[in-house]
Length: 106
Image 1 (cartoon, rainbow, N blue to C red):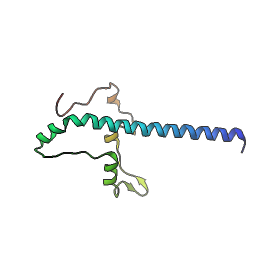
Image 2: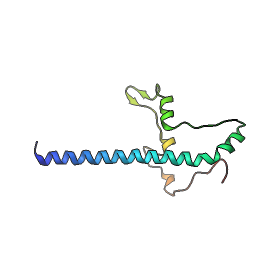
Image 3: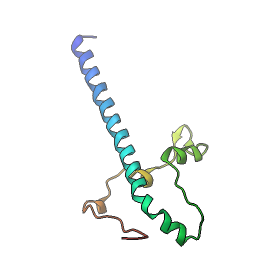
Image 4: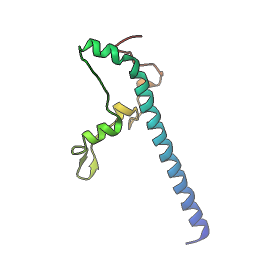
């Protein structure tokens, strides 16, 4: 294998690694934003559902909870798009960048 081919492969691997790291960082950022947006509403939701306590699972917690069901025939069978916002297709209604309406508060 020539040095040029090795350099091209190394460059491609580095690009893939950077892309994966960016995706991981974006998922972490979205999860934190999700948590931050929910925190002020916990008291309102507890009152609405007449509960003494309320908590949310982290994405890792959700994945652990569905561990036995998330793989079918060796392929991942659990879509996390609703939790992370990373959908496998473009959401055409999101082009306007409109915010989702909130259940509680303003």
